Image (spheres, one colour):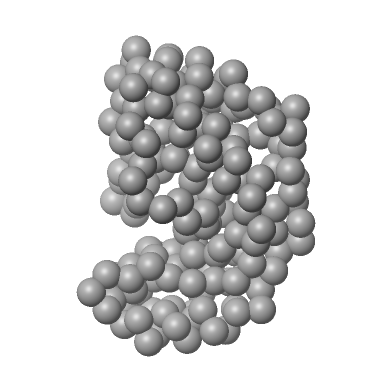
Length: 161
């Protein structure tokens, strides 16, 4: 992925250590709720599965591209894990997300470049496919906004078995 991180003026490319696939964003969480979330996530069982990142694209807002991303091929196992997380969080009172889940790895944040320029980037990597990799865990991160973007800190690690 890092080899694709370049060639777009004004893009704020993610550092390798910050590349991740978000299963669920929770927003502000207090200490008691964080413990409940950890309890719920630690009870999720599922076998490891393979994923392939394939193709690139962008999210836009009012004809301006805001995010460049790499997508996920055949995400049925990932969606199953997402569903288990959604269900568990619902049990402890965290409302389900209303928007459709679109699994992706954010490559860059953009200062509103034209959708046409973003389409050019996506076209350059339209044949991109990562080697298959095994997802054998998922993690809980906290994030804190810094001048250069969000900094993610590992809070907990959950092994799939």
